[in-house]
Image (cartoon, rainbow, N blue to C red; front, side, top):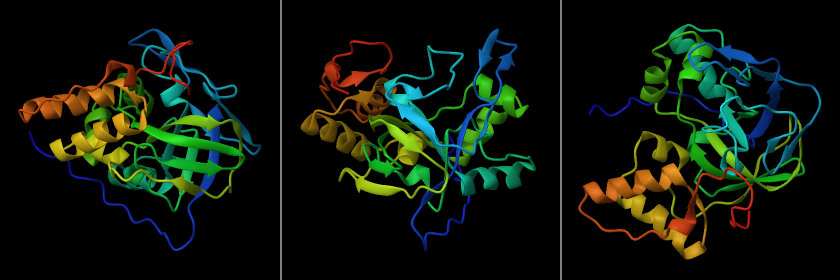
Length: 250
């Protein structure tokens, strides 16, 4: 298997990262293949958006089997990375084009460590898992090969869970409150974990009693299994984050 070639992006970090735009659903997008109406068509708004435990107030997920839930309450993507995608593919991709709720500037969402906590506006959020491209994303971009291009670029953007509900506006500074020492980033998980990274992530989750997104756990355990290593990760620390009464303390 050929390793992905990470999209080259120049991000100015001379100033603190900030939220450049906040986006909500403009209109529903009909997905012919699934027959669902998707909320991927997000566009910037002038007023604050409210981040609730199960997502942005007024936001919509057409496919609730694979989208939404506690671990995917908010999706953030770097403006610089999206603009690099646009330049590489000669596409017009304004803020919100990837279905992101939060557009960051001066902060690479793919370098965000899993479990990293931000304060933005009056809300506190925690990075959980990368975004995997789906058929709806390809249909929205208008290129059936888009999932392949997006994956090869090695940059996924980050999903977050809501630790403290609150309001976020364009211009709010990103204050990093905590960055776990395991060091495994959203981009690492998207591009493929090494056995060392898989160990570090699962060991951290067990030590801190942190519930991880189930597909992230499955990927880490697969990597360890292929390396001939055992890992008895407890099932109680893996969840889809969907539904109520999960017993997760989140």
